[in-house]
Length: 397
Ligand SMILES: C[S@@+](CC[C@H](N)C(=O)[O-])C[C@H]1O[C@@H](n2cnc3c(N)ncnc32)[C@H](O)[C@@H]1O
Image (cartoon, rainbow, N blue to C red; front, side):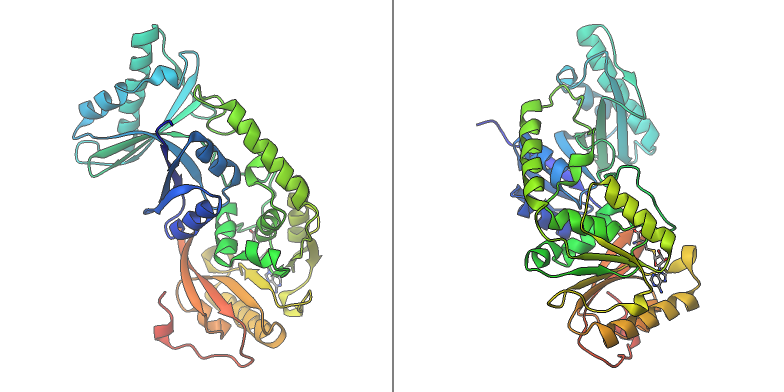
């Protein structure tokens, strides 16, 4: 049997445990959460499977080697020693993504330049010609990561970040990244709830990111099926037969899943947001989501049992003043307590006191990054009808 490969799936800080759980459920092996990433190992097929099926990962990297580089020459030598002609032809194109610094390599552009020089020199010394650089659509993306003088060289199997999976995506003022929406839904155990017949409501859907991710999960549709290109597509080591098998399997599952009921309700007070969300669902070929223009204050239970509410209310500098945000959270809390008793809610909230206005005591608080902003994800079991007064020591996660 061939030696297993080592892969790194990257995510935002705080996203590691949810991503690790997602990868384990996919059947991947030796899954270990690290800081801002999850490592796993197995045959190449497992890395391709993660590219096709993971909703929480941003990138999937295939590790080529790790070595100590105390200075730029050691970095060059370590990279040049790899068999690059197995990965890229001299007629191909290359990009190097370099992350990290050390005392000797203080600038990421300088690090990237050294790695690039080592790769093209190595190919030229064997084949007489060298590949060109293409920053936009290269045939191969090499990822170099430097920490504590240790360099890890990997191939980026994903190419464009994996959150880019909604063709022609229409976006409103503050769209969530698909990977964060998926993280929230996985944290809320939505795939199991969907199988158990629960409904999902997003009362402030904007461009519909929660609803689209939730529908993809409920209908067993692989997020990578709509992408035409990955980082491995023009890699010389790509195993087209294994990929075709995985894609055929995913289509099979998606055909079977299309018969599943889709109990997903996406609403927004703004008709243009609802229309964007509908167009995004159409672009993904997802049917069955119920979209409507409605203020969240009109929310009522749907289905034959309590279900899940996910919400990304407007907040923060970009959207509202703190007072307006507090009024929205207060009103949302009142609506949930008075009209949605028995349901569970996962609500994104900014750091600070705004979330107090909800008047709901969270069962758990999780930290997440929404782009560069650290936020709270409040997990609430709606069991009280009267508002709870939060103490200041209830705030920290
Ligand atoms: C931060 S955005 C949601 C973004 C969304 N998660 C996405 O990925 O595009 C907040 C949304 O809340 C909506 N909204 C604000 N007040 C509302 C209300 N009273 N009822 C329903 N929707 C409301 C806004 O129109 C806006 O689309």
